[in-house]
Image (cartoon, one colour):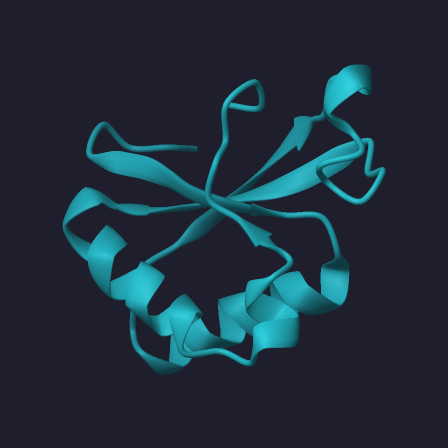
Length: 89
C-alpha cells in the first residue's frame, strides 16, 4: 500500500530485472515497495509484451537517489527499467 509521500519510480516487466533493481535498493537502504499494474493492450509493446508490470514505489525524498542507483546498473538492466509510467499508473 502506498503512503501519501510515496511516488511511483519506475516499472519493470521482467522478474530477473526486478530482482536486480530491488537488491540494489536493499543494499543502498532505499525504502521501496512494489505494486503490480495491468498494461493496456496498446502499450504492451513498450513493456516487452507484458500483460502486467511491477511498479517500484519509493519515498519522494529518496527518488533521486534511487534513480541514480538504477543508473549505475549495467546497461542490459537499465535499458529494461521504464521511468515513463504514463498510462500505467
